[in-house]
Image 1: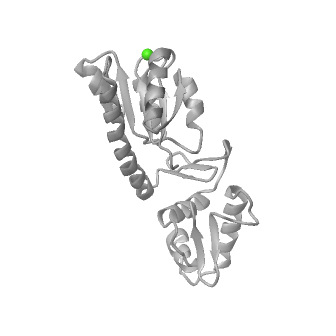
Image 2: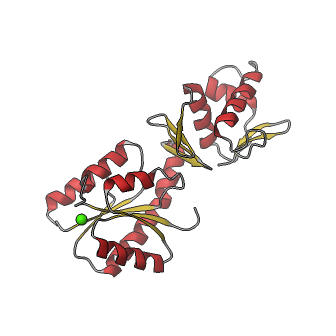
Image 3: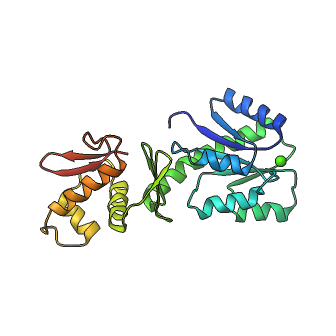
Length: 233
Ligand code: CA
């Protein structure tokens, strides 16, 4: 993700168009959803978003509930909530649901843009956090939610065993580092590092078969000759 991607969830077409235009001029790529249902479809995109601008008053699900569901599903993309209501209770409800910031309507465009920039800084922080707590992992066409054990490959759900998920998590936490079979046995299988190292190889074959675009020519689970394996996200 080099271009900063924003998901804009707003049912007022005029406002949505104006925001999309102005955020586009700032260099952001903006995808627009006019309802929570539409947003749900866009969120499956494994490329992900750097930030979400979320209107509270939507035609189907209200923004507070939507935000709550997002967080419950382990998605910590920074959220800026927009609403016509500016009572302290509404603000509290939004923040408790996991929104990162809150902007009452009507607002000045300059203020929204400043809030979005601030959200982007938090997005960088949130991704660093995700790498260490391992809640969500995205690479290539793969999205892994370690909290719910949900794994999607090119928008299709697949099933991994607990041990496969543990191995994947260890790789994610140690991305781009060469890991010996012994280290993997100790930290994933919790057995002696001199146990049968073929076990590791068999699991790598299985991960490649399920998660690599071409299992014969792996780009994510890479063999390092004489040393072990390396995960390239
Ligand atoms: Ca609305």
